[in-house]
Amino acid sequence: MSSVSSRRHAIVVGASMGGLCAAKVLSESFERVTVVERDELPAEPTPRRGVPQSRHLHGLLARGGEAYDELFPGIHEELIAAGAMATDTQSDIHWHFDGHLLRPEPSGLVGLAVSRQLLEFTVRARVAALPGVTIIDRCDVAGLTTSPDNRRITGVRIRRRGDGTAESALDADLVVDAAGRATRSPLWLGELGYPRAPEEEVRIQLTYVSQVYRREPHHLDGRIGASYNYYPGQPRGSFILAQEGNRIILTLVGVGVGESEELPTRNAEMAEYAERFGAPEIAEIIRTATPLTEPVLMRYPASIRRHYEQLDRFPDGYLVVADALCSFNPIYGQGMTVAALEALLLSRLMREGDGEVNRRFFLAAATMLDTPWGLVVSSDLRFPEVAGERTEEMSAMDEYLERYREAAVKDAVLGTELLRVANMLDEPARLMAPDLQERVLREAGPVRRASAA
Image (cartoon, rainbow, N blue to C red):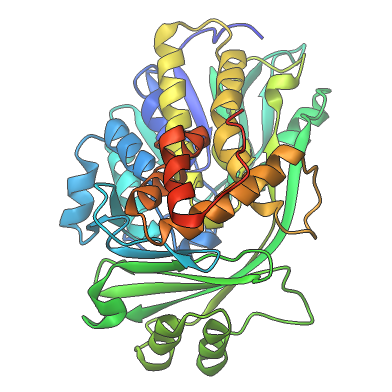
C-alpha cells in the first residue's frame, strides 16, 4: 500500500455519522470533498429511510461528546441551544445492571440527551458549510473505478436518481467507504481480485421496538432516563431517555426473540413486557403517556468486525471506516463515538504525511477498536446460545463483575468507574485496580481475584 498520490479530491460514500466525520477531517487536507448519499436528505431533523436505526434510542458516550466537540468546536452548546439536555450520567439516569441499580449520585460524567435526528442534522449542516465540501443526495454508487492494473482506486461510478442521466464516473484521489452495514466493499474489492478481509461475527439475535411519547414533568421522577440491561436469565430489557422538544423515547429489547415470541407493538402488551423484567416505571409511562409516533420494530442479528489490517494486498486510494469497518451491537451505544474517534485518527495520519495512509489507518484503527469490540464480545458471550470462544479469564472476570455490580448498589464510586469504562473514558482494566477491588470486597464479600491482563 503506497501513498495518496495527491490531495485534490476525496469522495466519501455515505452521509452517515461516520461519513460526515470523515468528510470534515478530509476537508482539512483535500481541495475538494464530495459526499455521495443514496437517500434524499431532509431539510430538518427527521428520520430518513437509509438510517432505520435513527428511529430508535441513541446515546452519545462521554468520550464521543469530547470527540465531536473536537471535530466541530462548539457543537455541544449548539445542540443544547436546539433543545438537547446536558445531564450527569450517573445521577440523572438510573442504571440497572443485571438487576442491580447503580447508586445514583453525581459523578461529573457529562452526557447529552439528544435524538439521533438532531445530532445528525446538526453535524451535516456543519459539514455542508465547509469550504470545498459538496453533499450529493439521491445518488447511488454503482462501483469503483481503478487504474489499469487495479492497484489504485481512482473514483466511483455514480447514478443520480430521478434526473434520467446515465451512469457516470466521478474521479478522486481517495475514496472512503462510510456506507455502514450496507457496505459493498467486500463485493467491490472481490471483483477487482482482492481477497476478502477476515471477519469476526458475534450473533446476538437482538430485536428491539421503539416509540416516542410526550414527556411529562413527573416521568421518571424528573430524571432524564433509565436503563434496564438484558443479561443471562433475563433476556429482556429497556432503555428510556428524554429528548429535545419535551419528548421521551422508549426502546424495549429482546435477545433471541423469534417467531415463538415476537416483541410486542401494542401498548398493553408493551407494558406487560416491561413488567416482566421488573420495570414498573417504564410500564407506567407506556400505559399513561401520550404516544407521538407509532412503534417501530428492528432486528440486529450480529456484530461484525472486518480485519482489513490483516490483508497483504489492498488497493491504494481506498479506505473503509465506521460501521463498514466494524458494526457494534447498538445497545452499547458505541457506534457514533467510534466513528468520531476514527475520524480524529484519520486527521492525525493525514497531518503526519501521505505515505501508506490506508495501511497505517487500518493498523491504528484495529488497535483502537480492540477495547470497544472486546466489551461487546465479552458481554454478549455471557449468553450460552451465542457462539464464540470463552476462556477461563472471561469466566473469572464475569464472577468478579457480578460482585462488582452488587457492590455498586451501595458504593457510588464503583458505579462511576463502571460508567467511565462504558463511556470509553477508561480502559476495562481500571475495574481491576486494587482500590476498586478493595471496595468490592468490603461491600460484596470475598471474590476470586481476576487478573487485569
